[in-house]
Length: 500
Image (cartoon, rainbow, N blue to C red):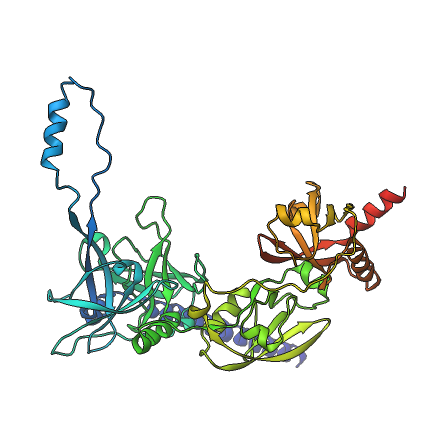
C-alpha cells in the first residue's frame, strides 16, 4: 500500500509539473504574439491619414547685398581690365536681393492655424505654405517664442483644412514607435520611423524638454510633427546632433506638453506670458546640503533676490526652495519650468528651507518677459569692515583680505559693497577646484554677512561647533553670485600648520 501511495504521489507531481511547464510555454508564446502584434507591419495607414495636415514651408527674405572690399590689382596688371569690367557689371551689386529657406509645419485647426519652428520663419517677410495636395497659401505670423523655438502661423481659407491633434508627451516611453513627417532637404513630403530613444533632454534653452528619437530627421524637417502610433503629435522636430549635417540617428523634438502651452498663449496674446519669481538660483549639491544641514539633496538654492516678487514675499539669499505651488522642486531646471508654466499674477505658496527649518512664503508672480533685462542688482547693506589697516590671512586654501577702497576701485565695486576679497588661491586647494579665483568677493559665510576677517573666523568656528564638515560661502564675481561649499578639513590643516 505504501509503495502504491508513493507512486501515485509522484504521478501527481509529474502531472502538475507538466501542466505548469505547458502553461509557461503558452504564456511565452502569447507574449511573443502580443509583441508581434504591437509592432506595426506598416506605417502606411498612419501616413496616408495624417499627411494631408503636414505642410512644406517656404520663406523668403529681402537682404541687402554688400559689395565687400574690392580686390587690389597692380596698375598695368593683365587682370586690370578684367576686374574693371567686373566692377562695372556689378556696380549695382549692393541692391537688395531675395533669399529663400525651406522647412516643415503642420495644421492644428480646420480654420488654418499652423505650427512650425521659430528658426524656420525668423526674419521672413513672405511665408508660403504648401499642402500635401499641392495647393499653396500665404501665411502670416501670429506669434513666436524663441525660447522653445516655436512659431504659430495662420492661413486664410474658405474651406476647412485637414488638421492633427496634440497628444500627451509625458506618457511617451523610451522604446515607443514614433513617425516623423516633413520636408527634408527640400525633397518634399517624406516619412521616417523610429523609436523614442530618450526623454527630457535639455540642449541649451531654459525651457528645453526634448524627446530624442532615431527616426531620421534632416535639415528641412524642422517644424514638422513627430507622431505616436495613434496619430497624435507628441513633438515638434527641431534639431539634430550630427558631425556631418545629416541624420545619424540622434534627433530632437520639442515635447508636445511644452508646445501646447506656448501655442495657447500665442493664439490668445500673440506672445508668451510666463510666470516670474525674481530670484537667481543654483542646484543643491551634496556638500552644499551638508553645509546647511539639509537632509535631502534637492531643491533650488537662492543665490540672489533682486527687487521683485520673491523679495516682496521675504525670500532671502541662502533659502532653498523645496516646494512651489504645492509641487516638490527637484532642481533649478524643474523650478524654472514650474514657475514659467504658472499664470502671471497668481499667488502661490513657496516652501523654503532656512536656518534648519522650513517656512512657507506667499509670492504673487510677475511676468518674466517684462522683467528680463531689467533686473537690478541686489542691494547690500551698509557696514564698516572694522579693519583699519589692510591685512591678509590664509584660510580654506584662500589668501583673503578686507575690502578696502583700493580693492573697491580695482574691482569696480560700489562704495557700499562689503565682504572679503580673495587675493590669491592655492591651485592645489578645493577652493581652486571649485572655481574660486583671485578678485572674487566673499560676501557671506554660513549664510551671514562678512564685514571682517574675524567674522569668517567666527563662522568657521560656529560650523565646527555644530559638527559641520563644510562651510557655505556666497561668492560674487562681476556682480554674479553663487554659493560654494568648502571642506573645513582645509581650515584644520592650515590652523595646525600655523601653530606648529
